[in-house]
Length: 213
Image (tube, rainbow, N blue to C red; front, side, top):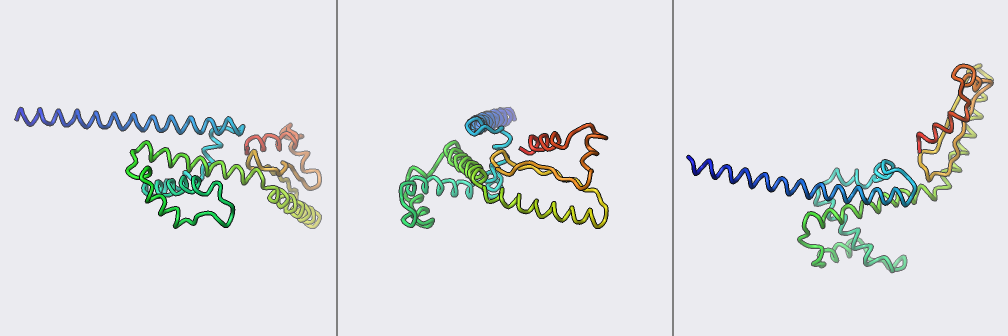
């Protein structure tokens, strides 16, 4: 009985040591990820929360298994390595890159930290791609303005026919979007904000834009 209790104590101590080691490794990974997020936020002049929200790739990959995450991350890393300097039309295909990953001994039997590093780099790349798409999306800004012009005309017409009062505030949803924040009101409805709430429409629009971005 004493031997069994001693064995149980040893096993418990070993489990605790293993758990402590794992906890330490996870904390290091989280710290590294936070440092990367902080660096991206500082470089692009946005908040860390904004970077985390933009990491749509991270949300997507969390839905799959870790094996799926790692496979995609390795393919991404290999594609950057072999296709970076190749012209359009001459880049390696996805199937070819998969075979390259399988043949690359440095990408086999990775420890947990190495796996996480590949996955983190992929998530960072996806976040930056999201920013880049928004930053150059001038067509979307034109679409917004054109649609709003039509909406304003329809609301004016509706107000003339029915006598309703309508007010509308719009703002871009991201710091890199180019659409301008604006407001619209039928008749003298915008006086409501100043007369009742002692706030000008321009001030509301400014605060809305700050909140959205």
